[in-house]
Length: 210
Image (cartoon, helix red, strand yellow):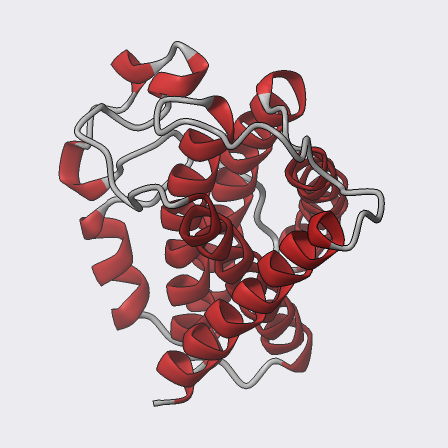
């Protein structure tokens, strides 16, 4: 239930943030995005919002899984931080799609907005690069203690690498200023967390998978 509540709260926060953008435009204040042009459904802005919302959702699920399968304070703290941050960001992304009046799903393969739709094989549920497969998610749910910690850190390292690639794509291609800034923040934060997770893996006698 806490998982559902967190996601719902994040979505509400995203709608508030989106509403603030509308208010700024209406009042004649400087807007963080081009005020006269709403992104189209095929735009990089919409594509990134849709795809990263899906990508983030899995990171939240993985983090809640490992939080309940280890008593290690360091891993639990990292998992909580990732879950909270990415749930909030997901809410913002979905809130912008609502503000723009655009669908949250697309008939096109993920990452088409980057010109990389052919990379989204969807094999065993891994819809985008870096995402864990359904089999890996099931495996994580069966592990505990150090084994769960190591596997989570490995999966999340891969996940962050895929997320950084997409966020860099938005920085290069998106036109909405506030979304570009969010994407750059994702790049910076997830690079930092990859370094932290490398140290945590080393402490446990392990290393990243790639």
